[in-house]
Length: 291
Image: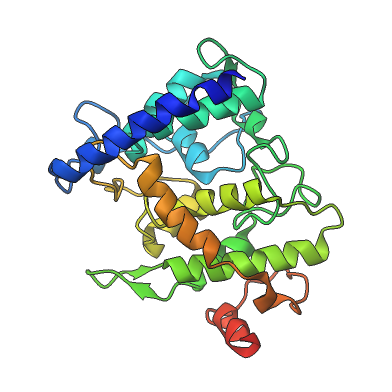
């Protein structure tokens, strides 16, 4: 019940922050990470890969934060308030988002947002936040350890990019993300005898993947490092420059477009995925052949 009581205040707060973003200057390039915080000027704390016994989960961004010491390096005993603060300063998500998601996680784990702690692996409660048809992990039915990166999926995702930004960098587009998500859902539905993906988790899945377009600007060079190494590139900063960060309202515009563009029927006849990544244009070829 307490989770639902927070919705209206957070929604009103988010509307206010969205309006402030519309009338205030954006943060300057190179000045997105707040002064005095880790990552200021693109200088991130040392990357140290997790050692045996450390806790990691299915979210590459949270794992990267632990690998850089932005969260406890062992990934354990993290307070929900600490997660809120670290997501805000690292990725420039708005305070509303940074409260809402950890608060949701606390309720999911039946813990108190204000006083309890969690390990990163705790977040992989199946069909809580973690879900089938991920773009980065095999379904939990096949890989219970959701910290395991499934390299073929990640490479296929990166190779599906068709866009270019203003500087000529190869980027994922909304259409690319919708298409590869269509393929993953069709594959997972075909191969996983315990496959589940309700409307809520479809939207949650599109929200997870939409961070690639928003926070990371879809840039393939950066995403290779984040998704395959779970490391923040040297010199990187969030692509969100709004003064109050990426609000839930603004973020949901991207999420809705990605989800609306997903059409599993384009890949209805696709075989279960192999261990080998697809060729760079295979996803688009299959979609063209079935359209």
